[in-house]
Length: 227
Image (cartoon, rainbow, N blue to C red; front, side, top):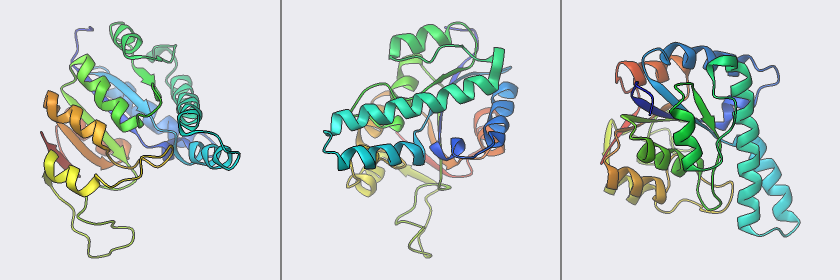
């Protein structure tokens, strides 16, 4: 591995949904800044575009494994956009398995990947990568600013946890939809990996400044998952 400690960052697919790429540039700038102190490994989510393709293909009768592969392709396209924005700061190739991720991280450049295997959300992929590279932190940057006791988008009285155990998190999120394109926040596979390897994990709103503080200052503006 590279001399610097690894940090795995899962980026919400929302980052890649704009029309101009200006949002991606903001994240590229932040990643370039933190890469002087840590080794970032970034996992790009598929987001709205992946769900769009999956919904259409499901209407054609495609099986769930094949739908997962469509989502993986879209997430890798998103990863390619971030690599382009990073330029020479990034490892040029998009890794397609855990070994390739490890080899890319050893170069010392910023590594950006998408999904790796059908049946795994990009959250689970990020957790597995964090385990594989011995990451000191897993930052899950999402569309919500943390983990709540109910959906804050529909319940204005929902309470956000500052800290939550894996067991409690599993109880809250265990009923999530496991169909292709249906993953959100965390899933059972990600939680099992976090638990078994005791990976320090935080769920925060996907904003460059918050990710930077979470990585470099260990500041959590969201929810810490206690393994």
